[in-house]
Image 1 (cartoon, rainbow, N blue to C red):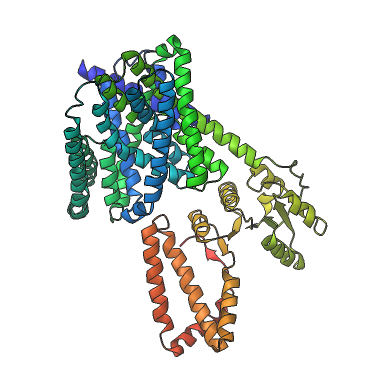
Image 2: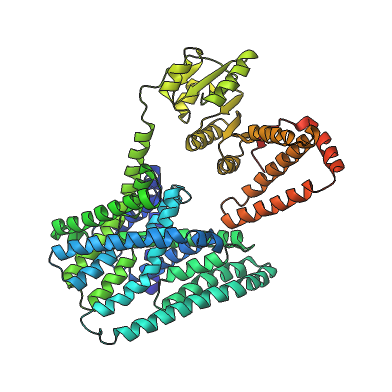
Length: 613
C-alpha cells in the first residue's frame, strides 16, 4: 500500500508538471501558477486525488531549501555585506510597519491584543519560494526591485527566530518560564549559525577538493546535497528556518571554484521539489471555508494584499529609490502571505492564542493570497508594460524600402551616423520613439519614422530582412537591450553595432554576443585626456602612447570583468589589479612605451568592443 501511495503521488505530480505547467507557460502565466492550479485540481475541492498531502508537503519543503542554497551561491560574503542596509533597513521597516497595521486591523475586529500581535507578524511575512521563483522566471532577480525583494525576504527569514520566540511569551500557558527558554533559544541559534559559518569557511573547500579528486559525478552530487541538507538540519535542530542554513552554506561556497558545478548538480532537484511545494500549496487551498465564510476570507485577503502593497510601495519609492513601475513590481511580488505564516499560526493555536475557527480562516486566507500573487504579477506586469509602451500617437507607416542600414534612435549619435551614410550615398532608415524628435528632425530628413524599435512588426516594415547593418543608438538602456535581443533572435544574419551608456550596459550586450559595442563618451574622454596631458607639457607622442596604452588596458579589463560582472567583490579586485598593472606600465621606460605606441598606430580611433570576450 505504501508503494502504491507513493507512486500515486509521483504520477500526479509528474502529470501536473507535464500538463498544467505546460499550459500555463503557453498562456504566459508562468510555471508557479500552473503548479498551484494543478494542486487545486487534484485536491479535495475538485478531483480529490490527494486526500493526504502531509508527506508530500514534508518533501516539498526541500525545494525551498534548495532554492535558497542556489540563491546563496550567487552572493559572495562581500556582496552580502554590501546588502546589509537593504536587508536590515528596508526589511525591518516592511515587517514592522506591515505587522503594526495588520495588528491594528485585527484589534479593531475584536481580536485580543496578544493574538493580534502574532496575527500581524505572521501576515507581514511573504513567500520566499513564490517570490524568488517568479523573479527568476521573469529574469527580474537582478533588477533593482528584484534585489530589494530578495533583501526583504532574507530579513523575513532572519525575523523568524524572534517571532517564534515571542509566541510562548504571549501564550496562555508556559509564559512563566518563557524568558529562560528565549535566552536559551537565542544562544542555541547564535551557536548554530557560528558552527555553520566557521565550519563552512574552513572545511567545505578542502572536502570538495577531495571529492572532486575522485572524478565520480555521483559522489560530487551526493556531497553537494549533504552540505545543503546538513546545514538545513542543523538550523532545524536550533529551532530556526531550515532554508536559512542552506542559504548560509550557499554564500560560503559562492567564491569557491566549485560554485558553477555545484549549481548545475543541484538545479534539477531544486526545480522538481520546488514544483512539488507549489502543488502542495494548491492542494491545501480550502475552498470549502471560502464558500462558508466568503466575506471574512475576502476581508482578510484584501487586508493582507492592500496593507503590504502600500507599505512596499512606500519602501520602494523612499528607501529603495525605485521608480513607480519598479515599486509596483516589488509590491506585487511580496504582497501575499508566506509559508512561514503557517508555522507561526499553528504554534499560536497550540498556545491557545488563536481559536480553531480563527486559525482556519487565517490559514486559508494566507494560502489564497499566496495563490493570487502569480496572477497579480502577470496582470500588473502587462498593465505596466502596456502603459509604458503606449505611443503618444499611432506609429508611422513605413514605405517599402530596401535600406542597407537601419538606425534605431535618432538623437545626437544616430544623426551623426546618418550624416556620414548620407554623404556616402548609402541608403538607410531611421526609427525614433520620441514624437518631438521625429517632428524636429523630419524637417531636414525624410528617412525617419516614429515607432518602437523593439517591436518585430515595425522592424519588418522597415525592411530589416534585407538590411546589412543594424545601428542601435537609443539612449534608454532597457529599450536598447530589448531591441538588441529581438533583432539577434529574429534576424541573426544582420550585424548589430550598439551604443552603450556604461560598463554594465556593455556587459549585458556582450552577453548576447553583439557584433560591435561603442561606449558613450569613452573615446571623446580619451581625446580630452590627451589634450590635458599635452597642455601640461607632456610631449604629444608620449601623450598619445599613454592614451593608447590606457585604451587597450581598459578594453581588456572590460572583457575580463564581463566574466564576473555580477560579483561586486570580484569586480573590485579586477579593477584594483588593473590599476596596479597600469601604474607599472606607466613607470616603465619610455622607449618600449614608444615602440608599443608605434605598433598600435593603425589601431588609433578603434571604437568597437567585440561582443564576445
